[in-house]
Length: 153
Image (cartoon, rainbow, N blue to C red):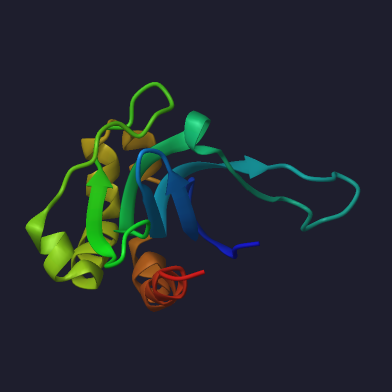
């Protein structure tokens, strides 16, 4: 069982986990999703029972970064990429960016610290307004640790 890390900020969750994807080839590594999070009212019989529910990719997926390696060959092949075009509950095609492959943690940190702009770019102005950028900056060291921990099973 893999550990899943979730960082909720406003109505947005950054979800980090190790994953294996099998198709014609086998990729594995750290997956970073930006998803919608909804306020959960919880039980009304006691204060503090509320929380957030992170929506699955099919319902709440906005953006994804994969730090993956092809693992079904003798020498693992790095395949770091992102999925900038979520549509109809699917991640869309992979986009390979040289800077992401060369400096993955710096690239990811810049992209995530600019989360409100990313959300506006993806058509989620309402979610962008909910993000506390100061809290996001304070959480970034923990997010990076979660990514490092998720590179391997």
